[in-house]
Length: 153
Image (cartoon, rainbow, N blue to C red; front, top):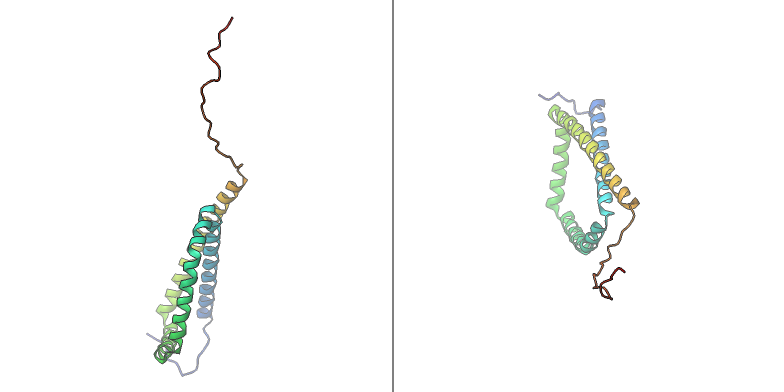
């Protein structure tokens, strides 16, 4: 089950490595998602959508900020935060949690690899679209001839 402790925390190099790997993979995933979003957002259609959503996003952010301020001042939230920290600390000592963390790191590694491929493809498509010559479609009117039929002599 769990190893007995004598009250003193002993560093576990394997656990620290797993935590570092998890942090690294989460950071990599965030970067890849950011790169994917940047590639998508650079398209003209996405730029228009971004303009349309910008004001709504600002309003949501302001409401979230106000809600967080209210929650942080609530003593019940502060107590829950402390209990959560204790529970996370205790769970971190569990072999199951360490195994789960390793599985999550491996999954994030695979997700990051897929995101890198998607970003690469999106950037390639964007570069190809930018390199392609711009064409303009001009309607051609078919007016009747200004003179009559031509007769060959």
